[in-house]
Amino acid sequence: MMTAPLRAGEITVPVALGARAYDIAIGRGLIGDLGKRIAALKPGASAAIVVDETVAAHHLKATEESLTAADVRAVPVKVPPGEATKSWRMLEQVCDRLLDARIERNDVIVALGGGVVGDLAGFAAAILRRGLDVVQVPTTLLAQVDSSVGGKTGINTRHGKNLIGAFYQPILVIADTALLDTLPQRDFRAGYAEVAKFGLLGDAGFFAWLEANWQDVFAGGSSSGSSAREHAIAIACRGKAAIVARDERETGERALLNLGHTFGHAFEAAAGFSDKLLHGEAVALGIACAFEFSTHLGLIPGNDAGRVAHHLAAVGLPTRVGDVPGLHVTADRLMDLIAQDKKVKRGKLTFILCRGIGKAFIANDVDAAQVHTFLAEKLA
Ligand code: NAD
Image (spheres, rainbow, N blue to C red):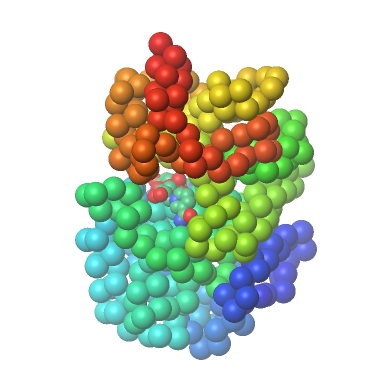
């Protein structure tokens, strides 16, 4: 569903998915218009706000005020912060609380939070009463550029991350960049790895722009830095929207978005999915590995891998295992974790590799033995 911009300076990125098309609205202060937009899209609907306790402390009041000012009944449903919240138990609790609050088929769920709340609330919306509309209001940089867009929702099980879920598109994404002002610097940095990823996988010009302007993206605020932040988020969202529009269910090129993620997931698992290494930090480490490995395979002439590692390190992201305090891992252990994550077919693995900055491709026939040799050299 499309909405017209309500504020000057707002950027709208359409996600062209036919009957499931929607807009991503990007700009400072957009939360103030959330109620008006929901009332316009769904007259008479109530809104259940699924939010974690940390985000609630900062942003729930403004969200409720925006809804009630537009005569939208607001029902908060709070969950604990953290990855453990993406569980069967919390899914059950959230669904029961939504039903207790008499949230009906025509009402809407507002997912106010980072990727954890977005994935959990999005999945609850997909299954409650066989599907309720969901509006994603991402509050982390990672969620604004990645997890709120594209419709992947889900929870974790003891067998692994994101193994239960659904493709379920939101009807609207509101990326209010002012919400990021309360985000801890470490979480902002982790989300930046996903921003850089969009340049590295398909837009060398954007990566060069980030190299020159990343400090303004971090600064935000009402200075000139503000427009740099919105610009970066919009470019990343456009990149993701274009890929999702062509391959909604990841049967092909959507896999490019996993650049850095195969190595990254292995590092994340080795760190026990703990605060030792945040998801975005693992992605940064994984991206550095993907570029080095591509160079090792002779795919990248010149020093693009060095340039990528230099930029990620300048921002403060890890590019070597030694950059992560307390992370000790061997090549054998990483290979075990990669094999658990990905099917090894006759000694071959699928990886996202690069022929240079902005030139990622899907390689289905990567030799597991070469990955092992590379990791052993990298960790030596
Ligand atoms: P998160 O949701 O856990 O948020 C990180 C921390 O920041 C939390 O403690 C949260 O309470 C806090 N926080 C959030 N917004 C804040 C704000 N504005 N001010 C202050 N504190 C704030 O983590 P995340 O990094 O946003 O997301 C990670 C999750 O996203 C993982 O579960 C991952 O699997 C998922 N993910 C999903 C997709 C997808 O396509 N669905 C893509 C990438 C990642």
